[in-house]
Amino acid sequence: MNNRLRYMLIITGSLLFVVLIYTTYMNMRGAVRLSDRFCRQFTSDTNGNTSHKKTYTVDPLMDSLRKEKSFLLNRIRAAQSDSVVLLLDLSDSIAQLELKGVMLYRVKISEIRISRFFHTLCPEARIGLFASPWKITSSKATIPKVPVMIKIAPRDTSEYSPDIVPDTTNRDPVHFILETEHGFLLYIHEVIPDSVPGKTAYHAFLLRQKWHAAMSSLKNLTLLKSPDYKPFIRIKLPRRDAKIIFRAIPEKALVMVKM
Image 1: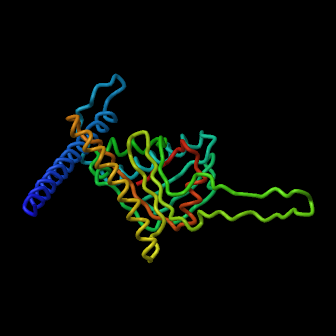
Image 2: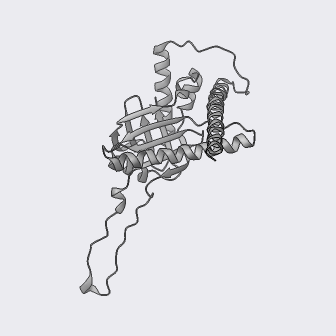
Image 3: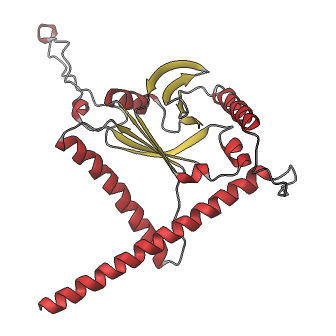
């Protein structure tokens, strides 16, 4: 029985290892295909024909000016929206809420991690992708979008009390994911408290996302399809600021990103 159990564990472990290697390899291929797709998209002319002009060696000063122009175009387009817009200025480590181009709220980003995919894009794609705001298509969070505030109605004026049951989410960890129309994932976390519950909540949130991604990859594998590759941007903010940003932006918010 022990030998049989040992063989089962070896076989299961081997299969999981093969799936992991396959998924990693396919993700690398997916990153290359996605990068090529964006490069073709932003190097094609008005007739849809791809330009074969090589522009991978760019003057640093010119590249900086083009990025600044792209960012200004992005802000102009986002200012046309009637809703609150989220700005992530990764070069200056700033997260900011804006409405019609006017700053409403600003916070310093504590930590930034960026998928290597964004650094491997061709110059045209790096400029073009950040020249327009990204639209959020879905989100997942550990806190509700709108807190539930409970107020007990008095039977008469003598029992009136202005007390409101406090928002219990003040104690909940704040982690959320915003997925954009391009398939990019924006992870926004609170700064992880130096405590066992805080670290446990953070790693549990990440584990759930990795589990869903693994199940999706396994499903694609059984269907002989390539796994979905989704580049990410991960930032950490103070808990209060992360909660304010999550609840301030609409469901289908626009996000401006500057790198």
